[in-house]
Image (cartoon, rainbow, N blue to C red):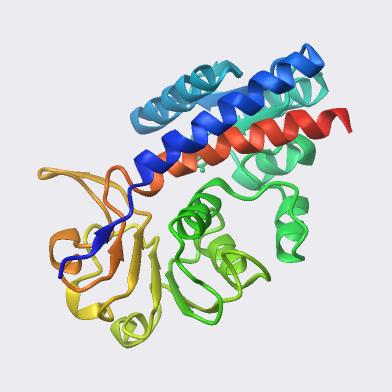
Length: 287
Ligand code: GUN
C-alpha cells in the first residue's frame, strides 16, 4: 500500500490561521504590530523568492515586514551597522538575514551580531546553546516545522529510532537535538548520518523516522527505507523534471508508511514557524 502523504501545505495554512488570530489579539492588546526585518544581501534568485514569500506570509497573518536590500558588494561592516540599527529599533521584533551571504562576508560574524532576542532563525550561539540545554527561546524554523508535522499528524516519536541525514547547523544538528529532547515530538533515539557515513543504507533501513536533509536530489531510494517508516524530505532542488526533494518520492512512497511531498511538505511549515517565532519575539519584547 502506498504511503500516506503528510500534507505540509494544508497544515501550514491551519497554523497560519491560528497565528492570524493570535496576532490580531496581540495587536489589540498592545497597539503594536509584530514586525520582521528581512535583510537580503546580493542577488541570489532563490533567496529573492524565499524572502518575498516570507514577507507575503507576514502580510497574510497581519504582521509587518520590512525589507532591507543590500548590494552584493556590501561590506561586512555595512551589514553589521544595519544589524546594530535593527537591534536597537524597538519597532522591530524579529531579524532575518537571508543566507547564503555574498562571498567575502563571514556568516558567523553576522549571525552572532543579531540580538538573541530578535534572532527568529535561532542561529545565534546563545539560542543554539539554549536549544541544546532544552530551554529554547526560539527553535530553528525547519526542524521546528518537521517536529510540528510529526506531533500534529499523531506520529509517535518516543522510543522510536530516528535517523537524520545531514549535519548542517540549520537543519541536521538542531533536528537531532529536537528529536532526542524530552517531551512531545522528542524522546527518540537518534542517529546522525552525513557525507562520510559508511554504509548509509544500513543506517537508514533501521529508521522508524527518517529525516533527509542531505542536499542531494533523490538520494534516498526505496531500498534504503524500512517498510512502514515515516519519511520526511527537507530537500528541494530545481531540476529539468521540476522541483524534487532529497527523496526519490515515486519509489519510496511504495515502501514508506508516511511521506512528505516536495513541494508542499516541509517548506510551507518552515515559513509558518518563522511567523510563530516572530510572534514569540514580539511577545517576549514586552516581558
Ligand atoms: N537560507 C536557507 N534556509 C534559510 C533559513 O532557514 N534562514 C535563513 N535566514 N536563510 C536561509
